[in-house]
Length: 70
Image (cartoon, rainbow, N blue to C red; front, side, top):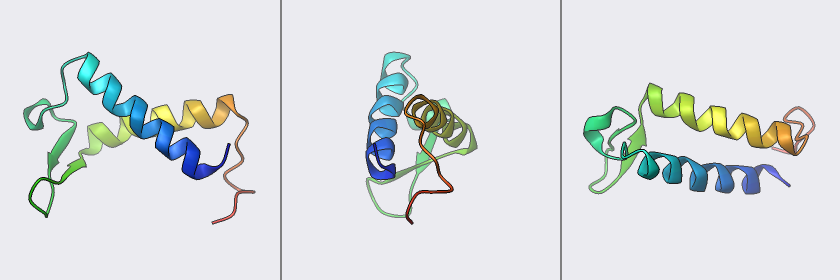
């Protein structure tokens, strides 16, 4: 599994978790309005959740960030 695949899976799981727990709205503290209309971005709280998911996936597949091509 490469980094792009990990990031794609992470994003899918991230949104699934937010929807499952009903915290996928702006008022829930995980996302905020972005610069462009219709765009959102993660808050610090959202980033913590996203990177926790990404880290768990990377660890499960023994992904090496240091050895990965950038």
